[in-house]
Amino acid sequence: MARTRAESSSVPPATPRPPAHRPDRPVRAPAPGEDAPDVLDAPRPRSPLDLAGPVGPSGRQAGPATDLSQERGACPAGPTRESVRGEHVHAVQGPPPSRMPRRHSVRAQILSALREALLEGELEPGRVYSAPVLAERFGVSPTPVREAMQQLAAEGAVETVPNRGFRVAERSSSDLAELTEVRALLEVPPLLALARSLPAERWRPLRPLAQATVTHAARGERGAYAEADLAFHRALLELTGNRHLVRVAEDVRRRCVRPPQSPGAVLAAAREHVLLLDALAAGDLVAAERLLRDHGVH
Image 1 (spheres, rainbow, N blue to C red):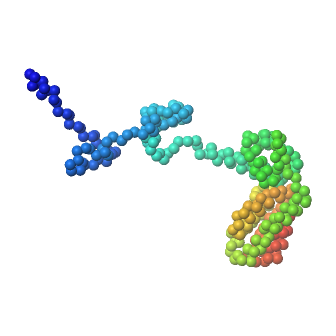
Image 2: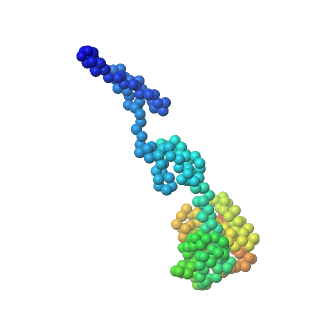
Image 3: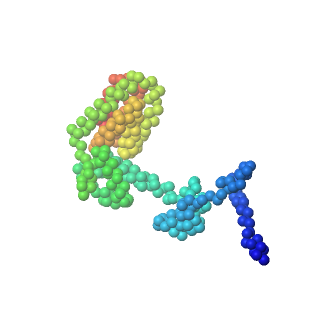
C-alpha cells in the first residue's frame, strides 16, 4: 500500500499544450533541437491604450467594450476595433468642414463692404464708428467687423480709438501728394526697366486684368474696380520678381483712399491700364512713363 501511495503521489508533470494558432500572428516551426515555442507565437501583451480605451469629450476613459456614442450624443455606433486598439483610422469624426471657412468668409465679405463704403464716402473721414453699430448695420456679430476694421487699421485706412471704435483716416491733399510720389518712386523705375528687357509676349497675360478694371468701372462697381486696379498693378510689379517691392507698393496703394470720383473719371483711369500695357509691350518708354505718373493721381 505504501508503494502504491508513493507511486500515485509522483505524478509526472503535464505536457505543456502548444500555443493556440492565431490567424493574425505568424507561426514559425521550431528549429531542430528547439523545445520552447517561438516567441512570435506567444500572446501579444496589450498596451495601456488597449486597456484604457478611447477618451470621451468629458475626459472619461472608457474600457474596450464601452460605447461612447451616448456621451458624444452624435452617432449611435460605438468605437471601432481599430480605434480601440490604437491603430490608424482614415475616417476621423469631427465638426463639419464648412464650419472652418465660414467665419473667414464673413470677415472677407465685411472687409470688402467696408472698403467699398470708404471709396463711396459712406464712412466719413474723421468720424468714429463702433464695431457693434456696424455689425448691426451688416446683420452680423461684432467679431468679424472688429477683425475687418483691424485689417483696415493695419493698412492705414482707419485709426483705432480706445474704448470707442475706429476713426476713418483723413487724407489731406498734401498726404495724397506725398503718397503719389512714393508710388512713383516704387513703380516707375522698375517697370521702365522691364519695358526695355521683356518681350511683348510677357505682357500679354496681363491684358485680362486690365480689361477687368474697365468692365467694373463701366458698371459703376467702385469696390470691385479698386480690387481689380490693385490686382493689375500687383501683376505688373510681380514681373520684377521682387516680393518685397510688391508688398510695399500694395501697402502704399491701399493707403491712397481718395474722395469719391465721378463714374467718368473712374472709367478714364481704367482705360489708362490698357494704354499703359500697350506702351510697355511696345517698349515705348516715353508713353509708359507719362501714363504711370499721370495714372498715379487717379
